[in-house]
Image 1: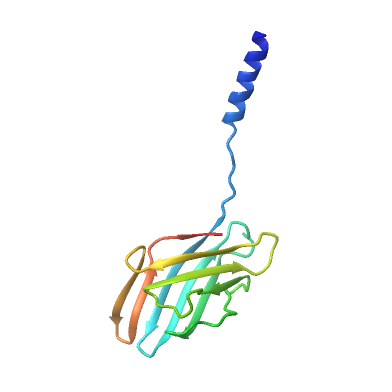
Image 2: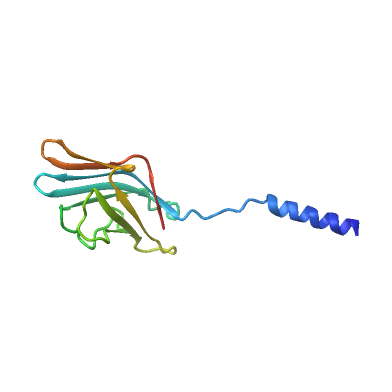
Length: 145
């Protein structure tokens, strides 16, 4: 009986000591900035790093469109593997939702994140001649997928 109790306690302590490995379900977005020019042209840039697809990332994502309207629905990152969407329609850099969706692969991914000026996403009005609004993200943004 003592041997059985001892064996059970030993088994339980070994089971508790084994670390549980969680699958990281977020992608990292770095070098993230956006600008609106006085002529109503909008540009946005960021770099996507996806731990599920190390052969495809990091990849640059670049957009150019008319500020105050919606970018093309078919906009993708440079490697063509991620759709870039703004579900709230026309983008206001002071507050908007960025959505990314993986185009293909064995792991389906779709995530979004709300960006608001005054957080790590900071915007400056008229920072230089010809630039109406300039925004950037301080650090690396983790987007849950």
